[in-house]
Amino acid sequence: MNIIDKFSTILSSPAGYRLFSRLVGGNVWQTHLADHVQPVAGEKILDIGCGPADVLNYLPACDYSGIDISPEYIASAQKRFAGRGRFHCQGIGLATMEQAPGSFDLALATGVLHHLDDKTADELFKLARLALRPGGRLITYDGCYVPNQSKIARWLLDHDRGKHVRTQAEYVRLASTRFHKVESHLRHDLLRVPYTHLIMRCG
Image 1 (cartoon, rainbow, N blue to C red):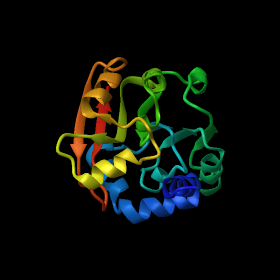
Image 2: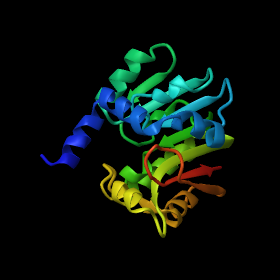
Image 3: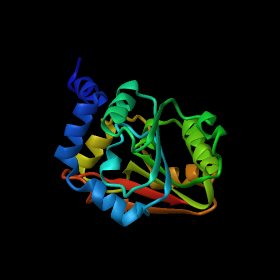
């Protein structure tokens, strides 16, 4: 097993994922939520690819539902945040929305799109579009290739667990197939290491 595979194994553990996030992320959750997500107390939130749902440490009181394909992440979320949300172990699909389509104020996809091929990414946007009420918003957050990128940032993106890191134009193109309004923002300052993120606000 090479160092990249070992690193992926560590990140697949909720504890490893949480430790890594603390080491390289700093105040990334607080900054991202304040600058881009801007959650409001009482909102109904769908977190697509929620991981261990650490975002709940920073959200105001809300009606939260998280979905993730990892049983380990979901088990960790259920243990740590029992009573604060609903957590479903499943891939991206429409089954979750059968009971409550068009009722969510906010959908999150944090670090998810760069793990998905174009077809599955479209399913994510389709799910979010169906879940959101009129006027609701989807906020995505992913690593992004840009021209003249630092060599460290480029190397980290090339070796990310996600194999579908894209350019800004490619992310926006995918989002625009399901959302009429897509605003995109590049950030180079969210982590303690050189890295480029693209945040999209879709409505």
